[in-house]
Length: 516
Length: 100
Image (cartoon, rainbow over all chains, first blue to last red; front, top):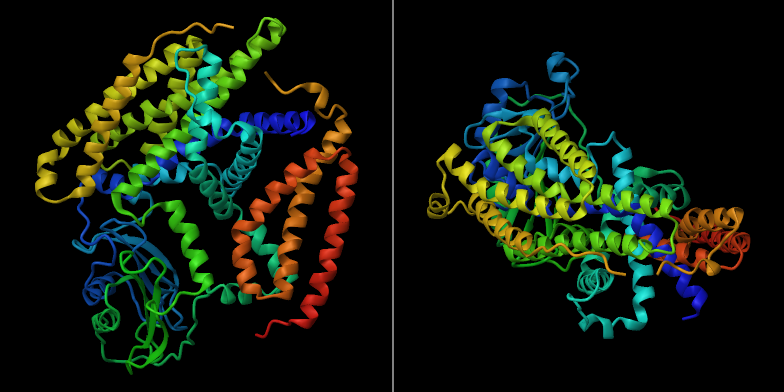
């Protein structure tokens, strides 16, 4: 590679990396915990899931309980299971009956516990798991700024990955085996950055591309609508099979109440290992009422297997059918793969744990990148003023990034003590705590101290998490183990192991003077 | 060892041209490329492919813009390519109308 090309690429990698570093660290750190979003939520509520894969409900009794609180006639009702939680999402559209009361003309969204039939709003169903999940795409920043910010961070991360690989290209094989931990600081950071960067490369590439797509999809959709579809957005969504069917409301109320459980049973009987994840009812109680049963085959049977049957409710006639067993289309394949690769939810705990480790490795790659940037500039021949500036930047970056570990661990304790925590509490606790820790470490002006105390504090809080859970709920590890509540058990064990590793690391940390 | 400054763009205008050509021009070319393919071939397959290939192509074009000697010339090249692709999209749409 020509000297000019190399230096330009090197500069692009440095500049794009340093600009996105903190944001990217937050995304990777919060994102790594998001692999366990559902586990965290269930642990926090001390609820076991009934079924991980499908809506665990008796639809008829749910409808029965809903009709006690809402007038359902003329509404579209959808009951969806997005997460491996006990609660399911319920959404009611406004009634299409022109004679409906004002109350029935308002749409509703809430969560429903299929065991107790209690309902929860979004706000009082908010949890630490949801918070960390949303933090990883900056949803707490005013919509849609946070989404686009995280989307562009993902895109420039892709840019940094490609330039990084090009810069490193010549030494990609030879340097992979080089690790010189007893050498000078700069060498350690460089070795760690390149070796771990290479190990995480496929993982990071996938997350950069899919992440950019999730947050910036409008940049793809909008030009297509105008250039190919002549402005007809509905047609695009129909072609991409995102469109929801519509059934006209006939305004002809049926007197008899019909059982909907039969439709679920019938669908499940059609295909072996079919899990129902969504039930949608159109025009409830109307002569033109339809029921759509959505779901997919178990991941162990087939990777991409979305299926759907739409029934006309009062005649039982099958209106349309999407067969999950038949060969899946390219369209379904891409749509499924983009999400599965990003969520890492198709291989059980093994895959989630590996993804978590790779996510944390990416965090380390980011930090080591910042450290290379600093060490390369902390030299005698660089003006004092600039060196102070570089040092300050690195100090602030490290303080923000590293203090995420203790405050995340502490939040696990806080939500257990202040149960149920709710949105406002989690926001205040996490962000204020994070700010205080960061400010303290910035003022302390010692990167070694920041690193050591963050690891130490995080470990102490981490060890306390299973204890606090045991004391507040009585659901100690051996109890959740015996009860087979693997999601609750997982979080306790996860913290024990994580805290042990970081505690070990914090003891191993030795102050090392930067020798140039 | 920060990058050697003598190889980097010094002029502010040149830098502006390269950054804008890479981010904006790169995006336009990447998008137009996929739309041109979509207008000629199976549009559903191309559009769903573009959900990932667009971003990769865009990132590559962003790098290419920075490697150019002259930022304004790369803008010109990107614009000419876009124009060519736009012509393909125009005729592609005429010959392959989407039935609704």
